Length: 300
Ligand code: ASP
Image 1 (cartoon, rainbow, N blue to C red):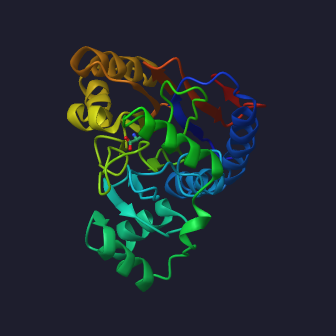
Image 2: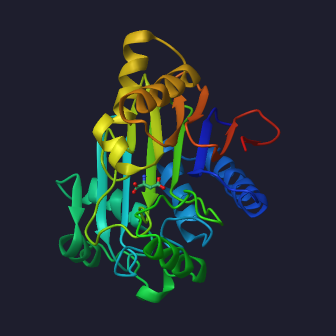
């Protein structure tokens, strides 16, 4: 079996009943481990995030949170640590798997990020699968938006509402050749202004991968991760301090809290196949597995 390490997340926040999330993340991390036995890190993170996007429990693809117009607008990015190649889409509607479209932006265009109508035109040119807009909307998100509007708030998918639903998804992986990759996908935050873009599709904020160093996927209040360029901060922390994934993840979250009192979490895998997970929220829904291990670790 090839050597690999993978970590995935389904958002950071607080949630009293995590049983459904445990089941979903266990299934998905096991599937990711199967993929990893003969796929490159970049393929593993893309295909794993597709599974997370297709699961209605998570705030990405189907099941995304709603903006202030009651619509789903998705952001996603993918980054290949081999050559720092990256692709991203922001504010896309009707695209079944935003992360797969981000991968196409990386491989089939000369750009890193496409948004809105331009992204949709590109999606059509590469035959990206689409869905009717109501495919993305699940019942619980309508209630969540109603509550946020009533409270007059823009809220994290996983903030202090009665039933706090966690959401945004991501994956980081290293393969047997030492290639690192990361991907992040989200519907954003509840009741966000139409057109708002968070950290998830922005290289260095919600996603980062660099061979020899680490791969990072972030989740939390996007504006705080943008202002701290948190994923790149974690990479640089490792570069200059020569620490492992766990110390770098914790250093990143400490910086997020110190500088902007930020709320969220990160998953990190380093070039030595170590996993790091840290959060300033009560929990991050995360799971990880390394080659040779009999089962996945769930950290919530
Ligand atoms: N980071 C995402 C955003 O701000 C939200 C999340 O991680 O739940 O768009």
